[in-house]
Structure formats: C-alpha cells, structure tokens
Length: 217
Image (tube, rainbow, N blue to C red; front, side, top):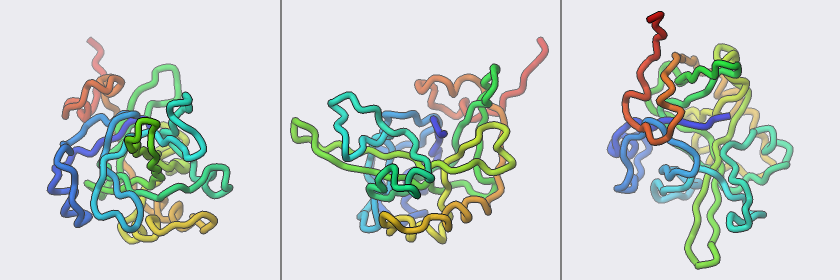
C-alpha cells in the first residue's frame, strides 16, 4: 500500500512538467497523508490541476454514511471489475514512504532513480454532499512491488511513465491495463531509511526526507 508520499517541488515546476495551471494554494509537500488535499489531473479533458482529497469516496457509497475512503486501489481490483474505474487521474509525486513489514517498522523513502517528478496512477470521483457542496476525492492505484524493493513492502504505487500518461487518462472500464504494469516495471528504484518523523503528518518539512543512520550511542 501507499500511506504517505511527497511532492517537494514548486508550483512552477508542476506547471512546466504538465503544461497545466496549478491552484495557488499548492506548496511543496514532504509528508502528504490520507484525508489531505493534493492537486491532481482528473481525466483526459482536465483544464488544469484541481485540489482533491486523498481517500476516494466510491460512487456507490456516501461519506456521510460512514463509508471508509479508499486510500489505495489494487490494480487487480480494477482488472477484475471488483472496483469501478471511476475517472482515471494522475497524481504528481516525487517519492513515497513505506514501513518495513516487521516488528521494527522502519520507514523508508522510495522513488524512481532517474525521475525527480513523476505521476502515480489514480482514480478519482466527484459528488455532491447533502448541503450542495462538491466533494472531490482520489485513490492511488497500487501494483506488485518491483523486486528490488519488495523486501520493504509487497505493494507499491503504480507509476505512470510520461509516454503512457495520456493513455491512462483515456482509460475506459474493461480496457486492458497490463501495459501500465509493464511500463512501471521498467523503472529503476532507489530507497533509503528515514526517521520516525514521517510517522506524524504534522511533520511536513525537509527533515522528513533525511536519511536515517542508527547510532550505537
């Protein structure tokens, strides 16, 4: 799964990478957590980035009814039709965090080795709340982890290469999505341990990104 990620770039960098306007409230982020707002490209005809809340409220449920938001969506669930595709989206990121699946729960920062800025595959949805306001939400699509990082966690965000971003945004229910898994497997990944600062979303500074080196004293 993916429970935290980063987008530690300036607004101008996002705009130049995708040639789309970014909301003025965006600022570099070092520890993005579920329920927080983040700019995404929602669908193939998106006129620009829009701020969506991380944690998809599916179209068949209502948040006010206590439904649990989908932080992650397994790509296998999209393939099988178990979960509706909703609207495909791109989620800009610079890295993500995972916790080693053992008693120590050491957190690690992970990222494609050759990319400073990239996009996670996502699905998003918009619906009206009882008071008439619009609620926008998204979920990060996950796939099997690349072998080099699978000892940290068995799952990872599905990274969409620049050459297939348009294809992802045009994706329709029932279309084959193996191409996107194969594309993600072609990246080289790097990782290193970070401190427990990442455990608390309130810690949202460059310190979260620093490599952690355990000392004997």
